[in-house]
Length: 304
Image (cartoon, rainbow, N blue to C red; front, side, top):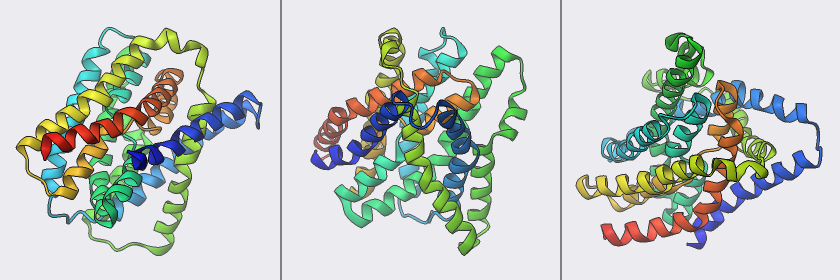
């Protein structure tokens, strides 16, 4: 339980720091707005390319683990889509993201802390399995909902999306069997490493505490999808699909993490409800201090 809390604490602290910096006028409002564009157009694509292009996808439990995780992911996505069907498009897309996206940074840290080097390797494989699928699915679903309101073309929007382009490039690079290109991959990793802290600071900087009570229903729906339904579906799938102990633990960790800070940047750049997304990320991160250790404990007993 303490390992889970230690993995989550830095995420929450950086969100709070971003909130305090923005309220203190450090450095300027324009700075925070420009950071969102930097993350969306440069840092996140670099992160996705670095992780996907160099990932070792030869794990023994590759397809079984993928099947288990996809059950939880698509179940939560469908729940978020259905639950937000009567909401406005910007609000609905933020609820959708909050219901299904996961925080891979917390999952990687927790997998290593609880399961050691084998856990970290399995978590990297899980990340490689999830990153292309979750981002393509979420961007497509958001584009469909937002373009329905705006009258734009879904395919054109997808083809212009830097996240989709970086995922496609990473997959092509990986499947072609290229080895790591020293300068290219080192630059991508350095840029990608900057994505998480900047995203978390931006989440906090754009958090509006006074409006949280007005978004209680939307935040509650997203919490049900991500912190309850997603883990429940994964545990149910694990009862049917056998995995070794390490892969099983990693699957539960990914399912139980709060929603990703990437969701905030995506909401801001694609026209979702960014303040609501910031609130969802913050509340889920805070709740996960309790729900994540509890989920790991209950899942361990059910699957033992």
